[in-house]
Structures are given as structure tokens and as C-alpha cells.
Image (cartoon, rainbow over all chains, first blue to last red):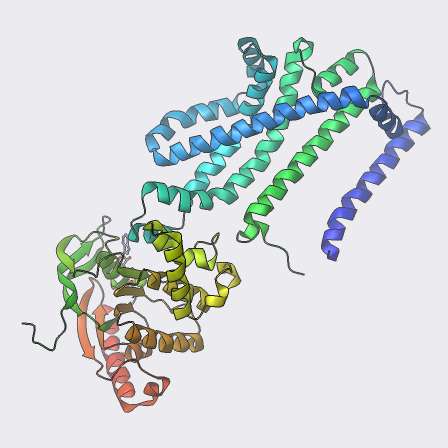
Length: 262
Length: 257
Ligand SMILES: Nc1ncnc2c1ncn2[C@@H]1O[C@H](COP(=O)(O)OP(=O)(O)O)[C@@H](O)[C@H]1O
Ligand SMILES: [Mg+2]
């Protein structure tokens, strides 16, 4: 490992430690009560003590996020392919995708939750709505950003529409798709949490947002912080997984993922 | 008209012309016959319609009037086109790039692999089959592009300034290799270049085009046996033809201004 990547790991860790120390100091010196701001050690202690219910909630939130992301990727890519094959379809559908994107999720979520019987499905739909747009937008641009020389080459050798799509457009779109996927991943988690908040205590299953809601009502602030911590860690983990997938797919050819030389 | 010792035509261009949809008149009606086994090179100032002519012949762009007839066995896939830039798929290995025309034609994988290996051997890149385009130099990428054109075992090769972006030493080496290869494989070649020396070195016939609108201005036969060796560059014949073409091109350029 070279020195640059050491710095990129050590610097944020050092920053985090400084932040935790300052947080601890402020709470200890000012003797802030734990129902207003618990210290980092108390949060950690709560996290360990309440691990079972919290972990259970984490799994539910993860399942909502993962299902929504999968749906957004499948549906979004499919729509992009249709858009690229037919300008008419794009003209007819894209405005609605944009409307869906610009309408705040909190405004649509209650309706979805009322209309869809199964609360899990309702949450997944909310998170999908929140995350599908970057997949559509990026993949569509990618499918269109094809080297004109390669288009000529495929034409010269009599490639069919399907061959052009599979062998030329889809690989050309991959870097754009992965850029969209990163944004979509973050949005899917946010969508899942927001939808859970809207569903509130009415939801039969209890994700992390439900834990936060409950802890807030019962003034169990350390537990609220512990749940918050889990959401943040989940977001970071998802981001890392997607970055890793992107590197796996692109590292041999695309500029964005080329290994750095010393 | 064909005497017993003139080979039959590969390309017969009968008054083909091109006006682009934006109104640019790129080519006056052109009459030109390229015979089987000939190596014909087009030189001319940029914008005189050289690329347009190749694209019309390859069927990548329709001609506005007139017709272009490719003889039996000289149309795609036996017609291959080497573009000015290597035009490789960056996400695919050298091997997969060269195999592309065969894959598109639905050739069984084992046959296609065999032909790909042979084509890479012809350009001396068999060891780089698994490399990716960005791991190769510009000259090597151009050779991959030529291997891809050769993989379909073409009889007619259209080449648009293929070595234009390379340094002179690399270009001279590729010219020599290509002179050998085209003679050995008995290819009919229509080649475009900016370089008079490259034209004289490679060709059996050189056409000088003039711009606005594009037309064939003059024609020079280079009757020395092919393939040519580097020593050909030192001969009187080479120098005479180079000077002659240089003068013609100079006249065309000043006329254009
Ligand atoms: N797709 C196009 N649309 C409109 N005009 C074009 C197009 N391609 C080429 N031209 C014009 O046609 C003329 C000939 O171009 P080209 O064949 O590329 O010349 P050359 O290859 O000799 O440099 C130029 O004036 C150029 O601007
Ligand atoms: Mg050109």
C-alpha cells in the first residue's frame, strides 16, 4: 500500500477520534444530562446493551433499502433501454419520472402507505421512488454516449439492433450507470428511513427509523443516538460496497477507476 | 475495354457525388475504377472529400447521385475499413476487439478464435491478445485495428489515414510491414494519406484530389514491384515521384486558396 492510500485512511480516522474526544470532553465538563446529549461512551454502551432489538431493526431497514435498490436498478435500466430505443416513449414517460423526482417523498409516502396493504411493500415502493431517477438519468445518457466511430464499425459489419445494444451501448453506459448507482444507493437508504418515519408507529415491522421515533418519545436519547449511529454506518457500508462493485467492473478500462500510479 | 492483362475491377465508381444535408458539396461526380490487387492511394488537402469517398464506398453514407459498384466478393464482410483512429472498444481485450466482426456475423467461437489468432499473428501482436487497448501504444492500437480488419479475410481494404497520428519512425515501420502484408495476402487497397512519401512508398497508383468541391485532379502510376523494402526510399524513382506529387499537390493547394 502506498503512502497516499495510508493518508486517505488515517486522516479520516484521526479526524473522527478528535471529534469523539471533543464530544466526550464537552459532555463531561459541562455535565450535560444524557437525555439531552449522551457522551460517546454511553452511546456505545447502549448500542451493546440493546444490540438485539437494534440489530433486528437494522436488518429490516437493510432489507427495505436493498429491495428498493434492486427494483430501482432493474426498473430504471429497463426504462433507459426503452427510452434509447424509442424517442416517443422517452418523450411520453420522462416528464413523469421528473415529476416523481421533484415531488418530495414525504408528500407521496402517506398515500403509498395508505394504498399498499403490506407495510413492507409500501416502504420498498417509497424507497424505490426516491432512488430510481439517478439510475434512469445516468443510464440513458450512458446508452446514448457511444463513440460514433464504433457505431460506424458495427454498421459496417451488419450488426443488428440487439447486437448494438448488448455489445456497444450497454458497455458504454456502464461508467454512467455506476455513477448513478452511487447516488441511488444513498437515496434508497434515505428513502427507506423517511418512509419509516412517515409510517410511524403504525408500521407493523420496526426498522431503525421506528427505533429512533420510539426512543425519542420515551426520551431514551442514548438509544436514539445508537440507532442513528447504525444508520450512518449502514450508509457508509453500502457506499463502500457499490464503490467496490464499480471498481470490479471498470478497473481494467475506464479512466475513473484506473489504479493510481505512484 | 479490358485487355487480357488488366485485372477485373474491384470497385467501379460511376459518377458518384455527395452533397451533405447541410448543403456542403463534398464530392463532384467521380469516375474511378480500382482493379483487383491494386494499391491505390488518395492524397489531397484536408476537406477535399477523401473520407467522404471512402464512406460512400463502404456504404456508411449514401451517395447523392451516381452509383458505386463493388464486384462480387468485394463487399462487406470481405470489405474492411480501417478508420483514422484505432476505434477499439476500451472495455474489451485485444482478442475480443479483433474477434468482433466474426462474433457479429455469428461465427462459431472456436473458428472465430482461430481466425483471431491468425490475424493477430499477421500484425505481430499474438502476445498481447489478453491486453486491453489502453495498455498498448498508439502504433500497437493501430495494428489491433488492422488485425480486426484482416480477421474477416477481406479482399478489399479501405484505410483512412491509418498511420496519420503516429511518429515518423513508427509510421515507416508500419508502412513496410503493411506493404509486405498487402502483397502477400493479395489485398486490394484504397488508402488515404497526407504524406506524399507514404503514398509513393505503398502504392501502385496515386490519385491527387482537389477541394471545393472534391474531385480527382491527377493520377500517377508508381511502377515498381511490390512489396517494397526500406531501400526503395533511397531510389531515384522514389525521389522523382515524390517531387512530382509534391508539385501537383502544391498546385492544388494554391488553386484552392
Ligand atoms: N457529416 C457531415 N456533414 C456535413 N458536412 C460534412 C460531413 N462530413 C464531412 N463534411 C464536409 O465535407 C467536406 C469533405 O470532408 P471529408 O470527406 O472529411 O474531407 P477529408 O477527409 O478529405 O479531409 C468538408 O468540407 C467537410 O466539412
Ligand atoms: Mg478525412
